[in-house]
Length: 346
Image (cartoon, rainbow, N blue to C red):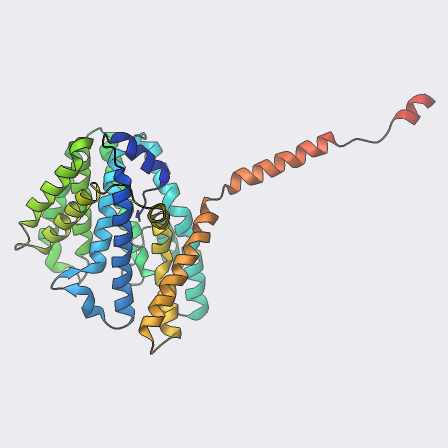
């Protein structure tokens, strides 16, 4: 999730591509926090049996948050100066360690409490990040369906960068996705159509991020977003994509913000992975007190996201290797048995 991901390394690179004196990453951090709040609101309302409050007509606040995350990821992915393979490896290294750790805990909790039933095949699929494709109706830690969607988008972007067609490939994918959705939308169960709307937004942001010069990127996103929003009467998909483009464009014009905003935003991915666990626990433990339950769940998830990030980003391999090297060197430096006596006797 910036992502759905925008880490510090990508942030520095993105700053390097912009000619503006203000930091474009500042606005994206604000937008990322807003997206997290929207997703949290969706899950909190659902768990407290107020799911109808989370939608305005066909516009769902949680899905708006997910779309925003994908828009940010697409923007940063297309402005990164890393080579394709290096970029994809770096993205996977950012996504999977925290995801794996959280999912191990989730599967253990689900098994110990009998909260959900699952098979070994589902464990393998979810650990690979493909759970939404293979077990969409029985996911453990449902919020992680987003990982599958993000991986699909990353693979498409990787292909576009490998063939050096960063505009043409996303455009073709937009048309292919819309065509496929138009042919199959009526056959999908309720809720499945979110995926094609999100991927369309990701590809649209990819095209704009590449086609617009750094000093015209804000105007390009705003203009494209307004044009897309004109299609709102025809499909709710236009609202999601257009709204995301407008918000991303507006965020690029936000000047530098307090450091605390950057700090909070840097934990958004880890928080996303675990917030559902804590919300479920607190809403069950504090039945009859929905507001207190949500406040406690959000607070605990926010606190837990800090050690989670520290754990997965800690250089375990380097530390173990350095410790082993130090141990071996100390053994080599240790004095051996004295040979003075034996020498003199000889």
